[in-house]
Length: 231
Image 1 (cartoon, rainbow, N blue to C red):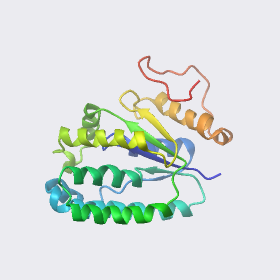
Image 2: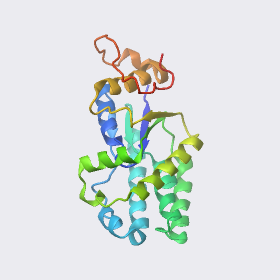
Image 3: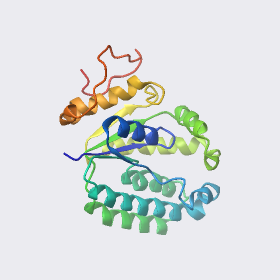
């Protein structure tokens, strides 16, 4: 049966990396967020007030295109960043901080709210939760020029909105992954823990198709919290 998982989280937290690794592990098709090809993004980071509406509309239009492709795909897919985050976190933050005018914000929200009822929600959203220091380290590692001047305050504001959003999210089940403690890029055991949770707890039908790994003791750091439902 076709499944649709989306990965949510602040910038730099590892959404694209987990999308790639899980898609390879599960044999699903990845859909990545359009960042580098956003023609407004570099200008946006130089002048947020001028380019916020343009940049957010680009992201929204791209998400809609992806949704149409996802709906028409015969197989299971994993999406890098949800459409919910675009409106309820990033556009909301720009409006609250005065970088998007009230007129532009209400126009944007009007478009978002008009299309949302027609979009089927994912079967599961994985929320990668991380502190600002972790985000800063990972942003520095990927080395995007236009991200070098992102302030600590901006990341903190986004984190606060993510926590509000996660507490109130009801469109589909939400799995919270503590990304400060789980580095699935460096440690394969962390990736395996997430993949196993999906296969055995959320989508047990995947057990028949998930490639088997050699049995052995799970090597999980003592300070790492277990994922919900793991036994």
